[in-house]
Image (tube, rainbow, N blue to C red; front, side):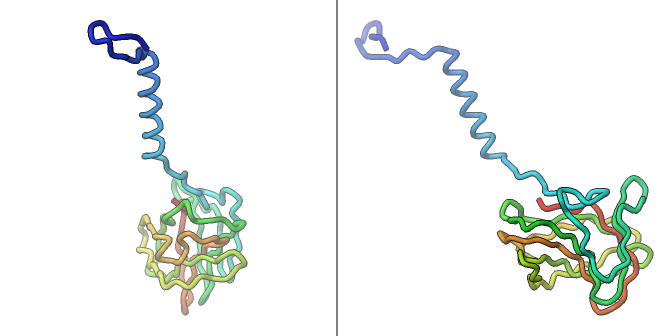
Length: 177
């Protein structure tokens, strides 16, 4: 500090370098906290990722089926069968949605319940049903709260057919965001 030239007041001297460094730190900190996002937790993208495993039941299932530039999972099955993807129990707290692309294949309109299993393997009740479109890739966004999975510890996601046998559908780019 030094005395001001005519007033005798005390003035703090800040170097230009300190001022720029302080402003940059503040801006960086604000940007980091304002724009921080959790990276997507990829389940399947041309193959199972990040420790996910196929625990499906009662289905005809082909993993990584070439379809143009992507390799989706091909699923068809009997009543109540499911594509079930398993992982060690993890918290969904950092995520708000499950996203994926689905194609109804040659027939479309399959009734598929989107569900999760809590740690320990108990299915969480959900009435969330999708119907893939005929020969069309459709992006799907499922809010975790809509399937009872928000802020929960889960270990499976599954896409379950309903009371009827269903024709093949294709699914890819499954992830939590």
